[in-house]
Amino acid sequence: MANQLEEIRLELENSQVSDAEALEQFRMRFIGRKNVIGDLFSAMRNVPNEEKKAYGQQVNELKNLAQAKFQEHIDSLAAGKGETEDHADLTLPPLHSEFGSIHPLTATRQRFIEIFERIGFNVSSGPEIEDDWHNFTALNFPENHPAREMQDTFFIEKNPDIALRTHTSSVQIRVMENEKPPIRTLSPGRVFRNEAISARAHCVFHQMEGLYVDKGVSFADLKQTLYHFAKEMYTKDTQVRFRPSYFPFTEPSAEIDISCQICHGEGCNICKHTGWVEIGGSGMVDPNVLANCGIDPEVYSGFAFGMGIERITMLRYGIKDLRLFTENDIRFLKQFNSL
Ligand code: DAH
Image 1: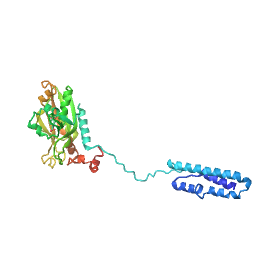
Image 2: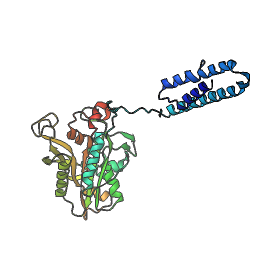
Image 3: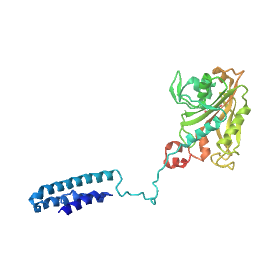
């Protein structure tokens, strides 16, 4: 009898449980309804009377030991450290985790800023809901002038007019009203026009405005700065072409074209078989605009440009439909995972 008690005590002391199945076996042997300790209690009747008390005490101790060990095994399994620990299987294929990515429009905006920061431009911003002065009047759009119809506007209030800004040129005005030259600034942001959505147009899109005002700024500075930009944003052999144009806020004004990044001059749908694609407008800041902002046009001159970030991005990555930028289709966005 005494031997048997000792054996069970040793068995409990040395017990190891590495998984749920072993735990269940332990439970059935020492805790469950018909367990070995219960058998020891049943065997009490064969124990001589004078030893019964001591025997009973020992079996009780075993019962307590079994309970304590059982709890210990449960705890160690729950903590994930069975006494014979499971090792990671290094031959299993890795879990596939996907990283998100920067949106291509954001990537282009960041690259744009990087290029201009290196030549001394900072970044400024203005409100998307603008008053007439900043969006039109200060930019030399005369009242009732057809130039206002160049941009179909979403008005929020009329008289006095409050509208969703139709371009980021409004930020030029805010900067010139508040800062003294030299001014070198970029203004990225959302703009809004009442246009039907298609592969090439959207009622919400993004522009990047640039403004440089100082003594002696010339058209040569404008051209050289945009040559530099085109080569940095695209490739060293990218060509830039200026086409005479009209904007109320610049004089002279020019559209900026770059050589088509899709067909490289051979002719494709994107460049409408001309080899050139328009990326924005530019010009020398009209003296009236400088004066409207309290800057003396006799002392200072400046150039400005405004480009569509969507257009720049489409040419950068060969994207043919502008709607892809806002559809949130993961198959499209995934392709920019390395940005
Ligand atoms: N604001 C013009 C537009 O949205 C773009 C533009 C043209 C901006 C010439 C300029 C500029 O700063 O000089 O169509």
